Image (tube, rainbow, N blue to C red; front, side, top):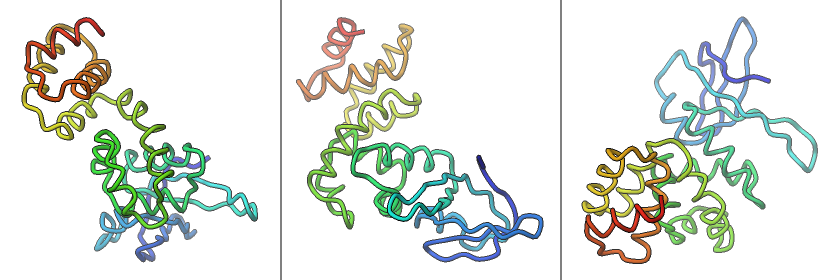
Length: 197
């Protein structure tokens, strides 16, 4: 299985890229985010995800400028009813950070605004991906705090980190608390979180 490919960027369009490596041209389907990253470059590295088209059994390689985008592609295609085309459309419409913030803030309307994503698909994406994002890397704590735009939550999160709790656990606890009481003050958030952690 191929993890990534580096080489000369032989061809580039908004939907695919060809990277030449040792005289062989590898074509990959790409998102608009990756296209923008590659535009103007002569050399490139793309992270690969191979998908098999269920209808005709054809293997298609998808290329991503970052591992983060590839991980989101994998997460989206793990949601029931979400294929590679839908995942590419979502990643062409939103940056990885925007997508994470959209899911964490449960912004159904923003997901529905993407071509081919209906109400049920948007709700399923949020339901199935929210926990994965919260349990993911610690950087998502910042995404939650931005999504909530709550200075008290940020202060409480820092205090809890200083007490030795893990970022993913803090993220989940604060998110739950803010859902129940959006105006909670720092002390209230910390007290409630300590009961949950």
